[in-house]
Image 1: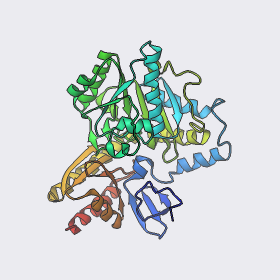
Image 2: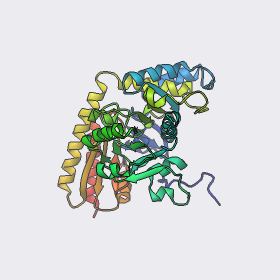
Image 3: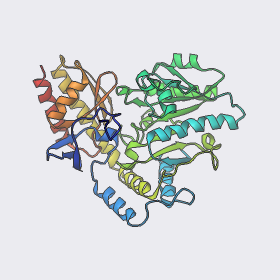
Image 4: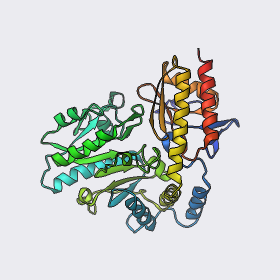
Length: 389
């Protein structure tokens, strides 16, 4: 009998019934330390009291009213995002893939309005991941995601991540933009060198291109700054955001400068559910918490502790850990055996992690963890490695 839920996920035989802070509780009552955060989504942990209150209060007032009318929550959240980023404007949607779709459309519309409709191609990086729609799998360019969905949507060229010379060689008369993740997440926690990101900005300016950053996974405090590109002191023209923005509630956003977004006028883009009052209540609360003066410095501090402890484990088990890499609380270890084996063993011992490309095990804990959670996670990791033959 064919599964009633479409079998597009290789799911673990594990189901949860509640969460609290950094922990998830399975239907059999077992507690797990969640260092996956729903793939960097539950940035404030599970059932954060302020998020619970905000959603309960909003649910009692209004869930949905359509973007045919003003949504005051959108105006407040957009103002906060604009105030704390490079951007002048924001479009709200429901996911990272939708935010990327908006970004791709914006790039094309920008050049069209400037009288350059022939400029529509986007230079992307190998190893990238930008979503699961037809356009975003083409932008990602990975064969495992494209297989069976040919023909791939035209308009995307790929060069090695971090290779500026290859990128410059790929620029042609049809090139419209450069698109990268400041840290490649699904690609294996590959961190873009700050100088590389700065040179991307200079190259985009030199050739009249738009620079687009995909911060769906890296954004919202994940790397210790509100957005990862801020470490490099560089700003894009367009940026896709999602995951941690809603703290677990589905919400995404495409942020842009006034220049890049000028062509996106009434009727050029839309979303039925995007930015509804419930989503905006969640996003506004997340921003309230993350923009408090002490929050991001605390994330950077605990991230340094976790990284140091993971480096210590790697030094103790050089025969089992090849590398530790990442930025902030977006860290990965590369084991010397299939990452799926280590992920399964860690899960059996009560620690949830997530796989990524290049045989990496991702550590994406909630941003609210403290040293006791680091101690617990590192203890489980050490015991697990010791037990693996």
